[in-house]
Length: 286
Image (cartoon, rainbow, N blue to C red; front, side):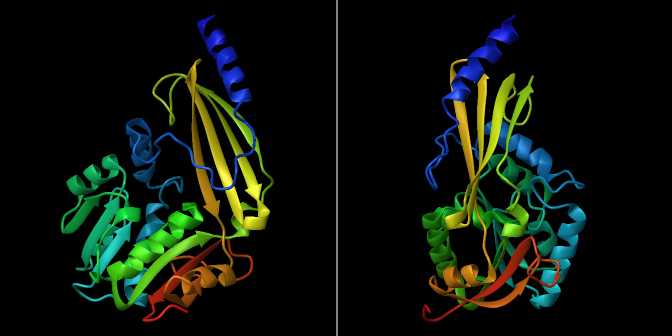
């Protein structure tokens, strides 16, 4: 009976929150630094056989090996890993004797990274607020975090990365293309006795919205863990083409050096689900 009352109340709340949000309308509930959710994310990061939070660990191994070789990263090269999570890439870069700094907003991930890897400087903080200046030879932002930034955040990030890098240094990252997101918008319901979104019983509605004129998708999660309050989590995803990512980079002081399908060195083509970008700091903006 109690569960039935909860579900009825939750459905009533959810029914009022299902309108399509305005473009880049942000949610007001913490996601990356929510204590319960960050622990769930850490668990997914550490699962070696899933791509849910980080790529499979075999892919991470291949990416680090390819990047070190392809970019000719030498001993003591100063590396910045933005959104480093629990140190899956940073620890591997450090094993190549690079000078590595990792930065992440999740306390759970940074605490794990500090406890399980050596030779890496870890910073708990928001990379949209970082204040480095001429400190790094290459910056990485891996697993399409770049596309999760709304346009104002993206340009702010590029400004801060540009300032953090030395002249001629590299910014390496990846983004999704329309090929990865071209399925129709969908909606799904979940009822759990406890799980990813909350330790308490909850009902959640996940819905995908498309903003085709802006090359943007939204994955919205509405979670009700009691019958009186709903939490709304919005994860934006700006997809790119080679032309559009080059325009964004050029207007923010970078030039594209190479485009690949992914950071293991697979070549890009028109059917690729992602684009891996190697960009270089320009002296003057395009």
